[in-house]
Length: 589
Image 1 (cartoon, helix red, strand yellow):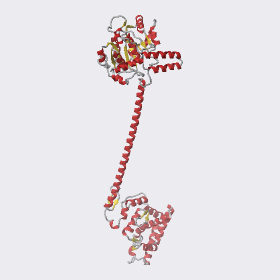
Image 2 (tube, rainbow, N blue to C red; image 1 turned 90 degrees about the vertical axis):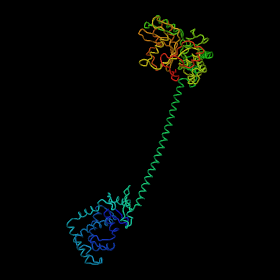
Image 3 (cartoon, rainbow, N blue to C red; image 1 turned 135 degrees about the horizontal axis):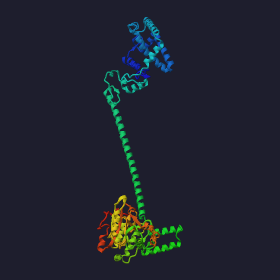
Image 4 (tube, rainbow, N blue to C red; image 1 turned 120 degrees about the horizontal axis):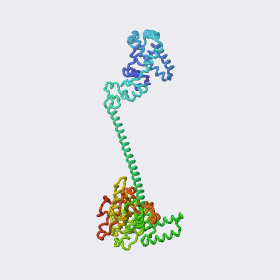
């Protein structure tokens, strides 16, 4: 249903609204829908229709009843439908009346009144005849279908021509889009109309259009402002989330870095968990608790350890002597697959004990090297009166060398402290200690593999050249006066005491490992030593596949002036095999 915004009249379709607006509010003239009578007011026209056209009204009421039966309309709707049907029927019957010359406005008196009975009866008779003929020509259902088809055509806007699906949508359209036009006085209807470029609303003057467009722009600016505010908030939130994520990431990285640092400190004995003495006592207590050591043995070893620490000399509990001599005898009488073999000077084997297990290999290899130097008259001048020191004493000697200015970079990496710790030492610390004792030595670095499958054949060739000045001729077993060689790689160090040249031209190193216990080394002292006992000493080219190797080779005695010159590792040293690299890249135990 559509409601007139001017008078409140309700109609059912958009054409009826157009008719209503044009007749009632635009032309301002009431015309009889049956006989075209005009010039009277609304009440007089109602009286005229009720008296002169009663049969037409009866037909309309019949149509109303049919509609009520078929659609079940309410009383309210009947009233509105009747009014609408009246106007629709007026159009139909007016068209019919135009075909009858007697039914016209010319038949009215000149004064336009409704008082002439002849006019009434004449028009009434003609109307009845017309309706009777129409009923004969078509039945009531066809008339009703035509009327309904006219009634329920899609509503069309009387101002802009827009078609809506239902009357409710058209009513809302007129009220929202054409409210200003409906309120515009009649004298302004001839003014030009203006279409809104943003929504298509038709305005009656430019000022209203401008205000309307300004509202659009304000709404758009407000929306854009809100979008910018929301975007700014989103960016701020994203920035905060990113900062929080970065903070968590840095915190996690810092935590992991600290854990790795502490792990390295524990690995290299720098976590202040005690040194040789504390570990020796703790491990012996564990042995007693497990029943592997008698309490009396515990106290005896503890007393021996305390005495050794007090005088700074190794107690010899882990030493095995005479192995080089036993190996020379074996190679003289056996080892038929060996063409020649070279041995270092006499050297004692030292293995790890309860106090240094897991970290003392560097110290034990130094003890092996020093044991050989102490038996060589060449080094009596610089090592006069010395004995093989215990591990805490070696730590103290390295610290003294640092204080003299030897290897300051290595000292800073170990916090200038070794005593009371389980810190590992490597080739540089051995070099520093020997140099401080005026023993001439140098470090050679094999920083990359020189053979297939990560092997180091040039390392074997260098060691062969170190022990052998002549490759051809001579006896099968050569006992040289050369000191043993300190051999360092990642995680461990060992001592090279000789090298074999086999009949198939391959080389094999003979190595003392501080990880090998005394009971295994003592098997080499037997008169009937078996070849299988040498397995723990022999290392072929394929057995040494670590990424890098360093060796410390002793060459003689330094003068006081040379001692100052060789304070820093690698300074002034020859590089006969491979390039040397900085202290940061040197291998540790």
